[in-house]
Length: 203
Image (cartoon, rainbow, N blue to C red):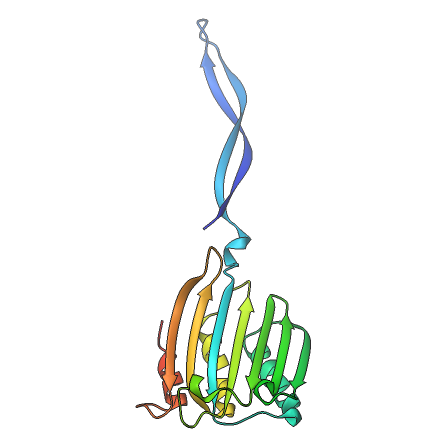
């Protein structure tokens, strides 16, 4: 971690008793300056540039009327992980069936939280027979995402009936370091909420 050196200047007065040949004594005062160097923690140490990416197959589709729902989803996550919201945008894309879907973005003080949903993804890219839509979701902050923050975000996905999820936590401070990479599929030994509960004790 980067450190900052701080130098503290201290003045010290030293008194010395001097005995002369005549037998008399006197006091001598001498002021010295001492420089002490200490190490202080750089505030920039808390800047980790965490980027949490989720590819989430959904068992339900979102439509134009779900604009408020997707915005509330983003707002709740923003609030629950203690991020400061600066603005928000929600868009509905229609026309081409493959492109049909909804996008929501919350601009936060440290970057963004975004969700992009495709209602009719190509079947060949889906991992589960019950998957109906595809969400690409991410949280990017120049700060830190704790395990608790990640769990909170995952819990909010429950409302969209997840069927298959792949998650990656990147540390982008020095390069693109993968801190965590994990996946879950519906129908395995644990339900989505049971799996999340297990992650709460994962370091």
